[in-house]
Amino acid sequence: MTDRSGMTLPGSALSDGRVLGPSVQRASTIFFNDLDALEAAGQRRFDVPYYGRYGTETTFELEKVISSMENADKAYAVSSGHAAIAAAALAFLSAGDGLLVPTSAYAPTKHLATEFLGRFGISVDFYSARAAQDIVSYCKPQTRVIWIEAPCSLTYDIAEISEIVAFAQSRGIVTIADNTWSSSCLFKPLDHGIDVSIVSATKYLSGHADAIAGFISSSTRHRKVLESALTALGPALAPDVAYLVWRGIQSVWVRLDRQAKSAMQIATALSRNAKLREVLYPALPTSENHERWKKYFSGANGLLSFTAAAMSHASVSKFARSLKLIRLGVSWGGVESVIFPTRIDLNSPEPKSEHGTWLFRVSVGLEDPRLLLEDLEQALAQLEPSEAS
Image (cartoon, rainbow, N blue to C red; front, top):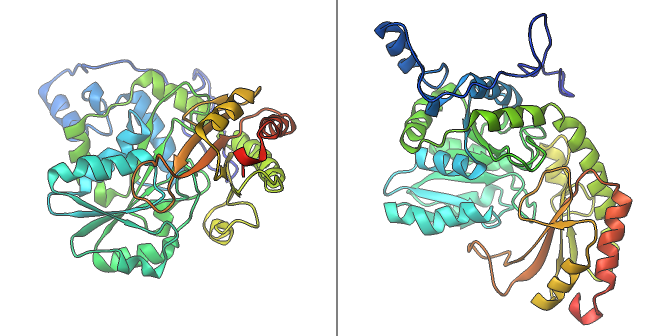
């Protein structure tokens, strides 16, 4: 089986005597016939079975798939997307170093940066999520890592990636990209000079809201530092979950294409709804991020957001109760549509705000987009003008 670029997905081809997909190898202890074999496996523990925490045949097979999708030399399977975030950050940061993060970054990334890393003498600064050459004004002498989200969580802001990478390379700063929005399909960070790409496979790669997993992908030159961090942290991915992710990857292109088309249809219609302040979807020609989206990405996904500035908590609750087809939930990328309401302050580095704008993130599933739009519009119609203006 191939994706739409013609890339063969390892483990997906049938041949005589072979079942479809990787075998599920459930193992903690691996047995060896002699000391030489044990020691040889220990030297290659992130590539061959040695001890289950470093991987099994199942996870190694899946890592080959992700490496191919990310155009990486090596990918590491871990227990969640946030485990990938934390391990990648900790791999390159030490006491006295600084981390630079976009203001619109994923809230758990902000929490890691503001609430945890400081305990170890690591400072954090924030930069405009649409930064370009002005990235130099946000950096400090101790900045060691620049974090890139492409696009940013909830708002889908897109920085000028080429400018940030060029600056980072001139200063010897490591760049790490959260590539979850693309899910390794629509953007290839390493092809643009970014050092490390992380992705939450919980979203589109697994695609069915039944698995939690993450990946860290990089070139060979970063293997030593990443494997040191992974050895210390031990965020192993269970083989059964690895299989679920592999299963999801077989249909990811079909799902992404359908969900992106549906999201575009819904976003276009919602942009004409007078009760909404703004509809956020980078594929919309009216989006402030549209030109950068076209520059860096080969397509879109099923995520869109909309904002309503003056809604009270009671009116948001009323809106949520009125939805008949779309479910409330905190994740995205599955086959069923999910909406997540939250307050955000677009200019604050804090993970969330109690007094900001109400933002509603919609993960468009595989349902009929006309029915999803009807559901959103009937729920909005029940609000008084003072509740959604």
